[in-house]
Image (cartoon, rainbow, N blue to C red; front, side):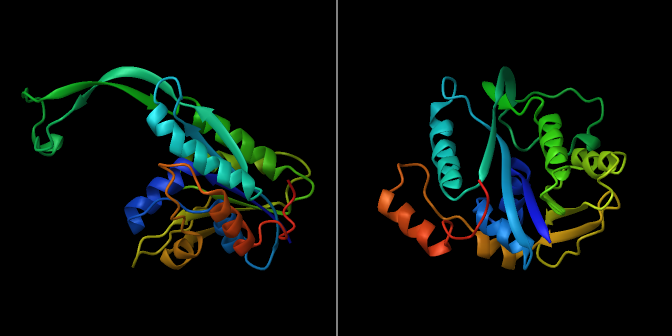
Length: 230
């Protein structure tokens, strides 16, 4: 069976950080683990990226990380974050707001130009849906816990000629927790700690990557000989 893997970058990275204490994974290694014995046709990694004109400090490591993904034949889809100034609460001891309904309190706040993924959910859904309609793919694995992407298999079922395409959801699975089946998909699978460790990315992207180290990594994982179509 020919498999395509679509990764909701921010959702999976944040989920892994909370579940395993470290967020970054190599999309190629994650895609291979999810595909198993099936033929892996393509991996698409979609995410927002900081604007270099607004937040160069956060943009640089993401740029290096995405460049490494591309070097291992991952299709990286980027959408520049949109920014707006807003107040950020500094105090962390305000308590549960449900216990202080309608109360007025004082707190320290800081003005912050915050980036957000405006319109990214729709963009992700459209690209994932496009992957599901490709004639060279029989099964699509969508790595996300975002319920907004539940519309992808639902809409696919309404498109004549794609009734046999299998759509699977892959979600981060915390230690000791069961993965509940999402009825919107044909199947639901977990990205557990064992799979996370297989795909774990420990590169330091805060500084320029060493070319020899990158070449050695690409050779070690065999990204040039795996047959993934660019």
